[in-house]
Image (cartoon, rainbow, N blue to C red; front, side):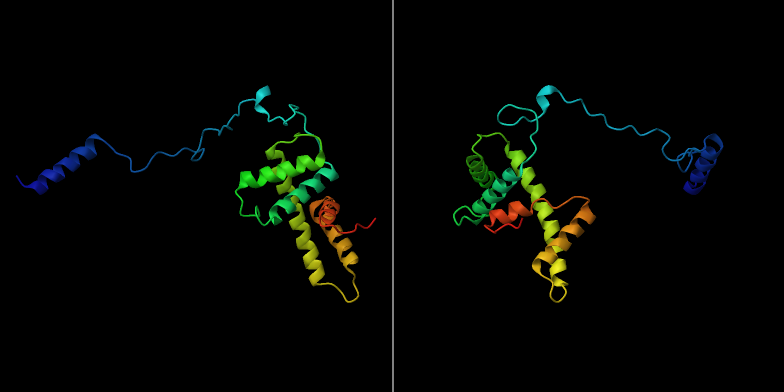
Length: 181
């Protein structure tokens, strides 16, 4: 028997007996007929929240003095020639934390995460303001003072971010600058 004939007979038999679809059947509803379910998170239990070192779970709003002391501690530690910026994260933040609590004189009432996240938030705001100020300073008009540029930068910051730039006093005070009233 010829193999070609045998192969053709097998094809004919398969065509008569069974139809094999080439693609998956589609529905009118589109590719996904099942509704997508959101992942449900388990409810937080009382022990799930991080409490401050003093055992209080209530969150204290940061004061201007705390922001100043955190800024000062970060600058002092980062400019220290022995510690500097090359220090590993936990050691670097331990020094900042110790200096911050010593300056505040209240004991340890904020966690490491509270300090570092507040610093990240402050640093982001300062960088945004600095970008606006630098742009204003580079395009300043003849006779325009630094104080006028600063006011324009504050106005633009308020317009863009729908909030006042409140960290100026902390930054200037930590640098030893005289503050305007």
